[in-house]
Image (cartoon, rainbow, N blue to C red; front, side, top):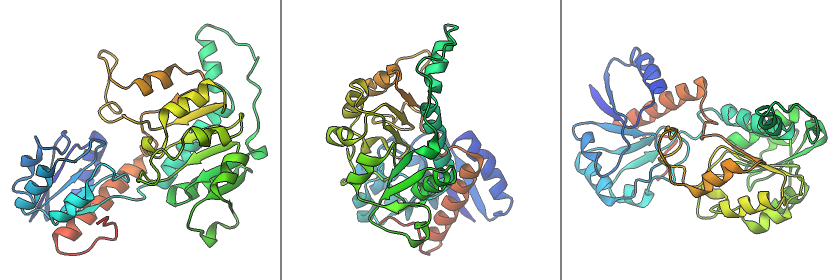
Length: 331
């Protein structure tokens, strides 16, 4: 019987794991509520494999060295983002790293739609007024989505789902992506980045966080956008230069922003700070902006996504433990 340990498991995942175990009686699964780090890595001793879902960086060499010493062959991420992992250290210690690249592209794309429509229809303004029993209409006139152009940076699995949703609503959809997929030709027009920034009424980004995409959206990019543009980020916080975005919103260089992620969100999102302080000046500022909305990285958080996160990651983990190769290996 194989024995695996799941770090930092969510309550919703536990429910799915119990269902998964009914069809996998030859696997023993233990779990905890802590992240994988130098203080918790020893918990993995005696297990055949491990999995984690966390925003915290795993950058201490001792973590990778100890996992190798324990005979573990992999680190399985139950999420898409893998910038938390030092792939070089993993490779040096013969640890294969996998992620779940598409647990539910639809879930994130629906969040993009929700944030876009919330901002487009000025619902954030209406809601704030209603707190003071102000039900006036001034400033609430909206544009209709079928009259607008949606520009997508990164038309992969998630970006293409975003394109399909907005196309179905009648919007013109353009996208910048180095890979041109023929099956999307009836849904969107491929253009360069500059065209997206200049022509799109809604700019939404769906790129991974890499060296090449770190602070991709900086001061110069926001200045290229329409003053009436809405910016959406449901990818990774680091692809946006947050001070530049804040300045663009404060100076009305763009009209609004919807964020499901922000720099420095680790150890904040998914926790309750209603009765304790948190340290993230970027987040505090965005929360006070009248033309920005932010959600705590819940774009992925649907029933289908949680089920897929568990099913795909468990399959990958067992495949590698048993000497096979996963299609989701990152190193």
